[in-house]
Image 1: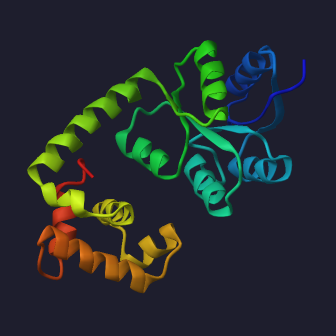
Image 2 (image 1 turned 60 degrees about the vertical axis):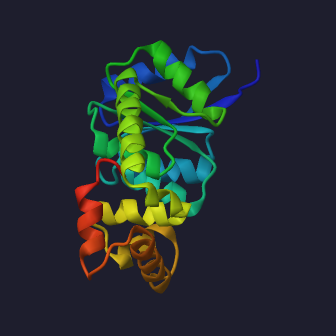
Length: 217
């Protein structure tokens, strides 16, 4: 059978990495093209081998999974990323969504979960562990209540919402410009538009508003 999905595994614990490789190699149509024990090696494998999927431990030494995801996004590399972690952390999960990480698995997942994740994200969809699915549902409900209470949010453009979310994370205009690949003066113009639409006034009022509603943004 021809190989359909080429995979890079990056995990610094040899026992866990070997288990992942065995589970994936046993699946028809899967090929593990590289293994890495650190983030720098993983990034190099992604660049040179152009895999379809990369499974990354978030806590890799040298260059962690989050840094790899940002680099992949910045270089526009055509690889679907799945995070593998022991943490059911909402903040990290939010970051993963921001960086277009398609899969988010906890390390207590089964081999069948890993296989489903790889197939799902290779097809361009998202896959999460059940604990994170529950988090997403609860987050959606909070956002719906927030938008109902602050209807002016619906007047914001997609980029303005992204900037507001980054402000809530404590990012400066310069940092936001780097994250989004736009000029700092463009970020400042968006901030002014957001203040006008939300009727928020004062030098630090927008930052206070964003920080107060970080969970909903």
